[in-house]
Length: 402
Length: 83
Ligand SMILES: Cc1ncc(COP(=O)(O)O)c(C=O)c1O
Image (cartoon, rainbow over all chains, first blue to last red; front, side):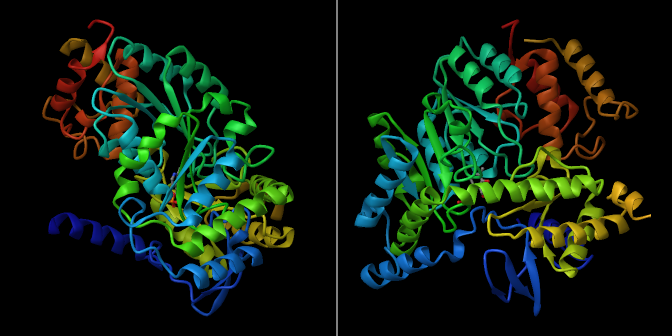
């Protein structure tokens, strides 16, 4: 036990040696959806997942305050043991209506939504088919259940098809798990082709829209909406912690029978439910997301702006433009140095080191918000380019500057 | 189920593709210490071998793979065409 943690501790010390501990950044205060104070200095936030910038939305704040006054600060227990508040049921109805699903079930975090849903849906003798780049909560949910887990090549429908063919004679049901937007690189799943494979194999399909809810689709329902395949997606999982600016997770579906998940999903049953303030702010955030489609347009423009600016500077980019813009780093040391220097220059990004990244490769990950102004993005591009040039990462920028 | 000889041949081929063809490989070769494959790259390596051999390996069997010998054992028990 100790040996394992000591090894981790010395690794952390190594990672922190070049400056700060990247996993222990502590902001003095948060000024807005796009700015904070760190060590007494103003920094631009380029790594928040605050896609629609709703964390400081006045209506969301007001609803949270009103709900706290009316219903208290917490629920002090789980829905199963200690009761459901009216707000929980209202949120589930509101979310189901937004998603166009018959049922929605709310969890305390998105992590728990995957944990509870996957482990309860696929039991002994069943099969889970996971994309190789799946989020940790998906891997952990698979571990918690008793199904056989098969990993397929990231975003490769043919590899999934091949694996399902090899499993065709085996008893048990198959559940395919995908993400709308993959969190590390910001790439989307080839959902239409995946749906074809799903149909051929008569499998179930779950799509985690954690990073695509409020981001993709004409109404913000996610990748399934954008690709016109919602009818083929059996379960939508997602989170309130990104575009909706609060915390919480959900699983939505149409078949009544799956309602029994409420007495099967341990991550739903054995943890306290969301507090009234959060429930109220999320309901309000869904209203805002519906009423202000222009937020989605700003978000898309901002993602394109940052992506284009960095591409023009000669950076190698991880994927097509999306609200997530990732720069693959040549090695760990460069990644750590880059991240530290950006922070010194007033730009906060995410340092993503293996094993949580595709292939375990280090990444400098950024995500934009609808709340960023074009000027803020220009500033960010200039700072990132200047810093990248010094590290030999932004070649075209260097050429242009000469 | 693929036989041991075929499995070893594919492992050697896959290692060459990874640029690790220069390390001499025996049943005792450690994935982590001799080939520098950490847990994540090892998972990806197994995925590559699954494709080459047209088999699948359940993920819960992967935690026990430390040496090439373990890997051969797991791969020869994989679910595949020859079943
Ligand atoms: C794909 C995916 N699923 C689930 C989660 C977990 O969400 P939460 O932060 O609400 O626990 C995240 C984000 O952390 C994610 O990226």
